[in-house]
Structure formats: structure tokens, C-alpha cells
Length: 467
Image 1: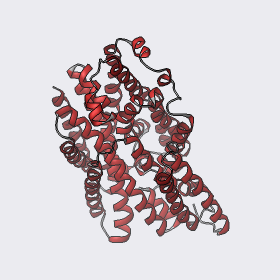
Image 2: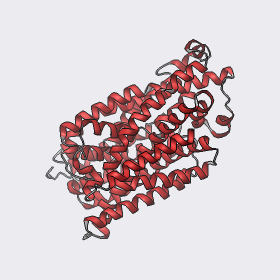
Image 3: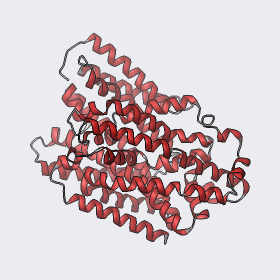
Image 4: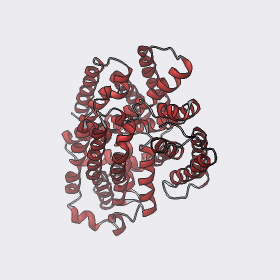
């Protein structure tokens, strides 16, 4: 029954994607859904896009580990972020571009557009790989297949599903996945607490610090998460592509606020599951063999298979696959859009027709899927760390010149290009040489140095440019 439920779900999502693909009339339809998304559709696709393997399996993993209940901040920080994004969303929508590098090219010149495109594609491969890892983990537990075979199967399914209908089909399926993620994972909590002997019994077998909302993660990391998310999502193609697709500026603002409400509610669910699982292991009511053999990211599927009714296991696995697929398809679309719109169309085939660019976008998405599979097969043990580095790289590189380009008339191409290169360099340096610093320190360092370089060079080499 478990496999049947998941198969029915996957077939349903492919059906929706195929239906949407029949209504794609051009590259703008494919990349920005014809700019027709209202607040609810926008909120659904924003919520589903950023809620992936890290926010489900990853948070449960951290809650089971040293972070305890405070792991909820990994998602709660996203709620704070989308409130902040609602302030700039109308401005981003008003740029009337399809990709972030297109904005850099129009605002700062072709060199900025090319460098930004190249830098942004590589983190997308990492982000897609994390979602494939999470999906493969779920499929492996569900079917007993090896992780490698599960990763290959998932990659083929997600890639095929992703290239069908572009952002319009992604949005339609994201809204369904958003609802399934919410109800599917929330349903685990009461079953898990009941299997653990009730909430009082859970608390009795947990150290006090594991129930703290801040002790495990610490305030430096909480603040770093907010900074990193805001600076990363504000310039991340998979997120701002949604704002570009909004019906107007008002819809963009309202969609961001609705997404923030969702994240605020969802944050508690995977964190609670993680601490309940830890309590059950302490009392011997949960067999942790699979977790010990394969790593803590197996906490949620292990708990599900041991305490949930069969139908609920199927629902949860469908929800988890929803979470990972909704992020993977968005990351693939983002990378494919950047390659076709900002590299192929500008430097390889400037005279390419709209139909040809659309085909290249799809082929680029398939290539990203293949590269991401290669990364996923490395089987990283800590998904959160990989995700946060991917976020940090683009935050440290592009955030300052991107936002400043919308508001500061004096911002120049020289200051933008230099700050991108230096900011990315700082992120990589901190990550390689100071791994013991708190999570997100690389993003904060990169953004800080980027801001100094950007402001200094703009002052030293002033040149008024049109916004």
C-alpha cells in the first residue's frame, strides 16, 4: 500500500505537469508563468520551493542531534526572511526580467551578467543534489533498494517531471505539494507522541537543553540564518523567479507574507518529530539500527515505518517526496533558465528563436539533473551544511549589488563586479579555513566584505547610471 500511494501521487503530479505543458506558448510562459501568479498561487510555490529535504529530513536530523527543539529555527528563520522579502518584492517584480543575471546585465553591463550567471549555476547544482539525496533516502527506506539505485530512479523521475511545463506546471504542482507537505508531516506528530507514551514521557527522557528554543542552535546561528536566508533568497533565482512571475507588485508582497505565515507554523513539526524520536531511542521503543548505520537523516523515515499505520506511512512518504521534488524542480528550472537566457542566448546563439531557447532550457535542466546526481551519489552525511554553503556563496557574491541596483542610482558596474568576486572569495575562504565558526558565519563575512568593497568602489569611481 505504501508504494501504491506514492506511485499514485507521482502519477498525479506528472499528469498536472503534462496538462500544464500543453499550455506553454513560449519561453516567457515557461520561465515566469506568463507573469500571472496571484498571492495564493505565489505563496504556495514560494513555500514549496524553499521547503525541501533540509527543512524536513534535515531539521529532524538536527533536532535528533545536538540542536534539539531549537532546530525549528532552520525553518522559522525563513518566516522572518519572507516578511523582510515582502518589503522588496514589489521592486523586484518591477524589474520586468526573467532571471537575476539578466538584471545584472541590464543594470551593470554584460560582464556582470556573465559572471553572475556562472556563479549562480553552480550552487543550483548543489541545491538540487541535496533534494535528490533526500528523495533517494525516502525511496531507499520505502522499497529496500540501495541508495545508489534510488538516487538514479529519483533523478530520472524529477528531471522528466521538471522539464515538462516550466514555472507554470511547477507552480500548479507546488500548490498541491505545499498542502500535502503540511498535512502529511503534521499527521506524524500525534502518532509519534502516542507511541512514545505521551508528551510527559517524552519530556522525562530528554535533557532540559533539548527542549530549549535557543540553547542547541545558539543566538549567533539564529541571527546568521536570518541574514543568510534573506541575502540568499533575495537573489536566489529559484525564489525571485516567483516574484518575477507575480501578477503585479501587490501580489508579490502578499504572496511573500502568506509564505511567511506558513513557515512560522510548519517550523515546529519536524523539530518535534526529531526530539520525540530521540526520546524513543532512549527508552528502547524505537529501533535505531538504520539510523546508526546510515546517519541521522534516516530518523524521520525510520520513525514512520515503525510507529505509523501503513496508510499514514504512504501519506508521509508522499509528503516528503513532495517537499524534495518541489525544491528540486525549482532549482533545475532556475539553472536551466539562467543558462539559456543569460549564456546561450547572449554568447552562443544571439539570434536563436524563442522556441530554440525553450528547447535549450529543457536540455540544460536535464544536464543539471545529471550533474546533481553525481554530487548526490557522494552521499553527504550532513545536508544542512551543504545547503547552507550553497546559500552563503550566492549571498556573499550577489546580494549587495543586486538589491543596491534597484535602489541606488550611483551603483556602478565596476563596484558590482569587484564585490561579487571578493564576496564569493571570502565565503570560500571562511568555509575552508574556519569550519569551527558558527553556521552562517561564511555568509555574514561575505556579505559584510562585499558591502564595503561595493560602497568604496562606487565612491571612488562614481558614475550615474539609469535604474
